[in-house]
Each structure stands twice: as C-alpha cells, then as structure tokens.
Length: 117
Length: 224
Image 1 (cartoon, helix red, strand yellow):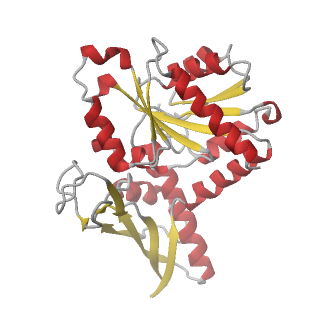
Image 2: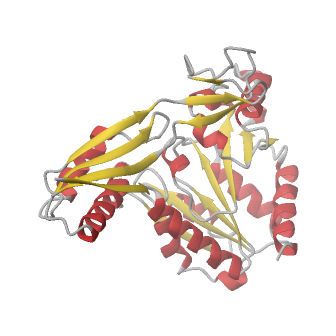
Image 3: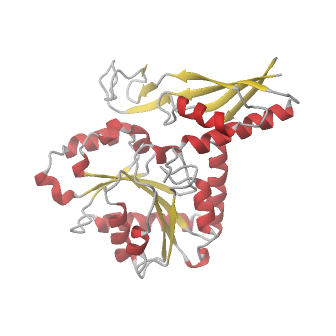
C-alpha cells in the first residue's frame, strides 16, 4: 500500500489556489509561488514541491518553482512577555526561566504571492 | 512577468469543511470529541471505557480512523450506537483524519439519535495537530510507557488540546515517568487544559473523565 503523507492534500490546496488566482489575473503561466512556512509547521517543503510537480502537470502551473520563506519559531513567555527563539526542545524563558510559554510565530502556512506571465 | 499578491492560508480548505461539519453537528445537537495520541497510548481502550461508563446516559457514536484494518471498529461495535471506520491508507492524508473524511462519515450516521461522537484519530502525535475536523473538544492521550518528554517533543498537539489524559497510571511503579515534570510541561504549554490521570485497565480516573464529558455535553446543550 502506498502511504501518502499529509503534504499531498495541502499541495492540492496550493495548486487549486494558484490556478484560481492565475485565472483571476488572466495569466498564461505560473512562474513562481511564494509560500511562507513556519518552522513549527508540520509540513516539509521538499515534500510539497515533489507533490506539486506531479499535481501541476498539464496545468499552467506546470514547472512553477515553489519558494519557501521560513519563519523562525518565536515564543513568548507568559510570565515576563519576553519573546525568544528556543535554543532546544525544552521551552523555557531565557530571561526569567519561566516554563509557561506560548507560540508567537512559527505555525504559518500560506501563499504570500505569485509570479505569473 | 508580474507579481500578484495572494495571502491565502493553505489549510483554509480543511478549516472550511471543519466548520461545516460543526454546523451540521450543532444542528443535530451532537457533541464531538477528537481523540488523538501516539499508536498504543490507549485511544480505543479509553473509548471502550467511556462507552461502558456512559451507556444509558448518552447515545454515543464512534468514528474510527486507521491507516488500515477494521479491528478497532469491531471492538467498539457492540457498545456504540453507530460506528464508521475510515481507512486512510489510500487517501490524500494517510497519517491523520481530515475534515473531508469526517464529512463523508457523518453521512452514514443517524445524527438525530446521537448525543456524543467520539472520533478516534490515526495514531500519530504530529499530523493530527494540523487538521481540525469540526470537533468541539480536542483531547490528547499520553501513556506512561511513552515517557514524560512527549509534550516537549511534540508541543503543537498539546498546545491545542482542551484535555490531556495520562493513561496507564497502573504502570507508575514500573516505569521511569516523572509525573510532576509531565504535568509542569502541560501547564507551561497550555494552562487551560484539563488533565486526567487514568488507567483504562483498572478504570482508575475514568469516572472523573466521564463526568467532564457529561458536563461539556450539558453546558453545550444549555448554551443553545
């Protein structure tokens, strides 16, 4: 049995959004899709590009390059409000040592823009 | 060549279907819980305990998500009002349930005769964190043999949980599991999460968990 990872469904969405936006802009070809992806997001860029190449075949998005802008994880200490990048998997505030932490940035996954012609 | 601005969440398609699922569940007054954990943490055992304990008080349906097989559906069949097995093996996501799978499973359910829907997600602590299904509450089970570091290693799934269940409490004397450290990690990541210590083997703590469910179902019903 072939086990697809969850990037497949997500990539289907990317192709659908790209084709809809390209058609709105009356474009003939999608050259590049600029995505923003958080470091904490559970999606793997290489895997998305792999599925994209197959799903976009015979569409105007065939051959388009996916460009990923990686958003580094930023956490916020609930105790002293310090925003920091975690140094390891143990999330604790570098300022006060607090371990009550929330995610400030790093879960994003969206299409920011596209280059078309 | 020209640049066009898009700014569109790639997960929006799933979220749209999830909110449609929730509307349908609300219309039929069905309360839904998404149960997530690593393989073997005790999702099916917890569902069986819950079915036994709440039988006669709530009509409960179950959706079983697995990559393959119907073994879990067979286990809960006799106790539940309705069971739908989803095999994700040939679907776009095999590692998690997604909203579209729930949407089609709901078509096979007698929603008018159901109060509570327990959704057993695919055993996995990573992928299910990314997909909402239309559930009212998200529950994560962590069991003692997995170790006390799971919230540190897989924070996302714990951050979004409404409740965290620590299962296999009967094994506490036999494993190196620092209960206080685990609970500290949960409180740090997600201070609002309810924490339940249970053993599906001895039934310890199941009563409190079931009272919480009843309370949630009733609160939801009175809010209508």
